Length: 407
Image (tube, rainbow, N blue to C red; front, side, top):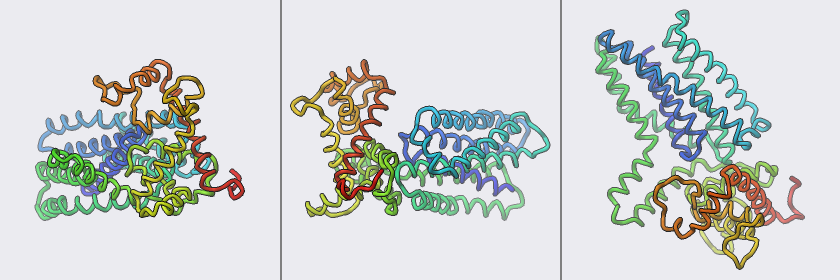
């Protein structure tokens, strides 16, 4: 039973870290991942408490465990509220992907029941079994969230998911397996050995899952005098990590209007991050293929992403109402402004940083307009409207009207 609990601990920790690392800017993944990481910590503290050398140590560990039992509930409730309230793209998935939502609903119900039984300490279910049952619910929820995110991005989940899991399992077995064997051969499981095993497994999982970010940090320190070399290494690493996400089986021409607009919206939000943009199925658009053929460029991952970014930039520029002016604040400018400044320029209008970058200082008029005249929710709505126009432009360029399917 002990090693089963440690396995569940490791799997929950990996899945939580995977979700957080999958797209750090996505609040939904952050909430689901944080809940899973908190649960794994609670499970580890429970394991240590049952094997503590004295009652006082066990009581302290169980006291520390309580906030980590409550945090997953808070995270999941916030996630459900966020999905229902603010993100119509995920909410609309209910009609296209009923099974993941059924999993979410059922797992949420059982998760709530499990937390209630745990907090009110009913003795008719052993505490360790109850923790494992809650963990299974969280794992189902986390898996459903990962699937829905991949579906919204137009990505393939399985290759990237299984590769990360396989690497984490391999590294954990290499380092933690040695301690597990020593514990199995010994006559007694000591608190110190158990603590070492859990910490080694956790370190192995976290270092593997966040290996790209760790390598970027080390490169930043080692190559700090060569910014270009550092950027090249980071781009190549991120591109290699993004490659398994590509979904070559997706039929772009067969997508309905909402599905194509959603992919366009996501691609626009990734314009500044070229490796992230390379995972978009829109890199296989006929307009991208034609431009690569005409220019004689290589049809590799980065070239496709670069060409898609150019196509998106041109579509955004066509939204500019007055070509002779660079900025305007009338209603005719709202779609151009909503996409150009956040996604092409990289401006963060609502950032609370104390110091502004040089580019932000040079765009003070734009920043002031966004912050004083455009609420965040309004900008979000404008971006959705503008993304719909860009999506239509992409379809018309890729499939001429006489050959387009009816959407």
